[in-house]
Image (cartoon, one colour):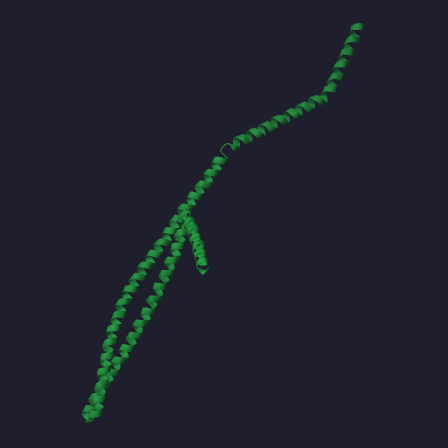
Length: 213
């Protein structure tokens, strides 16, 4: 049963990743943004390593200086004990001097290695920062190109969709005015028809009366 759930979970995860991959293929800006986020995380990791290496170099330097100072101190003390004829104190100071000198030598080697490694990390870190900056600029360029492409696409749609509309709109207005004029003329004709007929009838009667006389 556990294996079944594991396979089911893996299958669902694979489907999600496939869907995301397809989405990123359709949207290169989103894919670049994801790559930038990953690169920024890696760059941040390297930055922390550089800081840690700086601290390590400083610690090696401090420990080396302490060991060297103690070696010098024991050397002076050995000289004093030797001059004073204190053989046991002289032997102790010499042994201590040798121990501190050996420690200082090891620390010097470690410090030099830390400095060399730090230089390598710094160079790598600078390369990564330059690469990251280049990717940010590339994203800006792609976003600019995408904006221009979208703007041209939308403008073309507006131009294509409205190419014939002004003329068709004018034709509609022209037909509307003609219809309105026709309706006005028809109404005027109907309104004046009766008065015109009455006037004709009156004129005809006047003509008939003149003729009879």
